[in-house]
Length: 360
Image 1: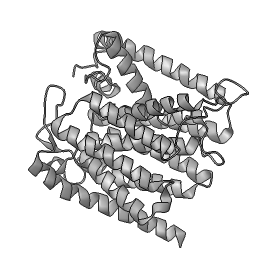
Image 2: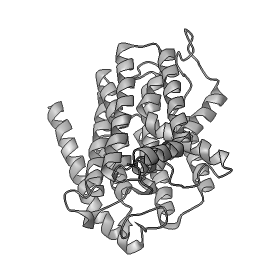
Image 3: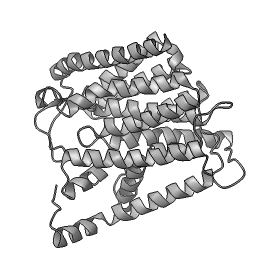
Image 4: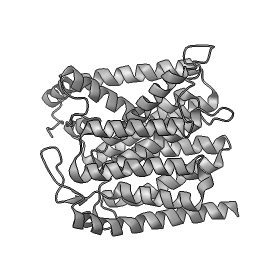
C-alpha cells in the first residue's frame, strides 16, 4: 500500500508540474515574464521564465497534501514562498543584488530561529574531536551557507538542462542516503523534487514538442532549488539523534556548483569587480569554448557532478574518515581552481596545437 501511494504521488507530481508549465507560460507571456536575448544570452526569441514557478507550485501542493514529508513544512513553505516571489520580481524587473542578499539573510534567520535549523556541528574534519560551533558563529555560518547555496545554483543556470541536471544529482544522492538510513519521508520528498523538475528539463531541452514550447527556470526557480538543497543538507547532517550524512559529505553532493561559484567569485574580486557581476566564464562557457556543444557540455558537467556525488556517497557508506574526505575535497577544489584560473592559456594552447577549440 505504501509502495502504491508513493508511485501515485510521483505520477501526480509529474502530471501537475507538466500541466503547470503550459498554464504558467501563457500567463508569463501576457505579463512580460520572459527572458530576452542580449550580449550574454544567446538564445532565440522570448522564453517564458516559468520552470521554477511550476516546480515550486507543484512541491507546495504536495506538501499541503502530505505535510509529513518534511519537518516544519509550514516554515519551509513560507520561506520558499517569500524567496520565489522575490525571484519572480527579479526576473521581471531586475532588482538589486544587495536587496536579494538582505532578503536571503532574513530568510536564513527565520530558518535558524523559528525552525531551529543551523550548522552547529562540522563533524570530525580535523581528527578525533568533533568541531562544534558556538551559537552566534553557527548563525553566521548558516546564513553564509544559505546564501552560498542559493547563488551557487543560480550561477550554474547557464545552458539548457544544466540547473535541472545538477539539482537532480544532488537531490538524487540525498534521497538515496535518506532511504538507506531509514529516513523514508525525506527520501520520498527528494524523489518528488526530481520528478517535479523532469517536465521542466524536458521542455527546456525541447522534448517532446521542440523549441516552440521552450521554458527557462528563472531566478525564482534557481533560488527555490538552492534554498531547498541547503534546507535538506542541514536536516540530513545536523540532526541531534538521527542523521543521513556526515557534514563533509554535503560538500561532495554539491561539489561542482559550489566550486564553480567560489572560483568565479574569486576571479571577479581579483579583477576588482563585484563577485555578483554576470560574465561568461563559468564552467559551461569553458566547455563550449573547448568546442563542446551545449548538449555535450551538459552531459560532461552532470557526469562530473555525479562522480563527485558518488564519491561522497561511497565515503558515507564505507565510513571513510571525515578528515580524509575533507582534505580530498580541498585537493579537488585546488586542482579545479588552478585549471579554471589558467583555462584561457590552456584553451589557447589547445587551439594552437590541436585546433579543436572555438570562441563563444
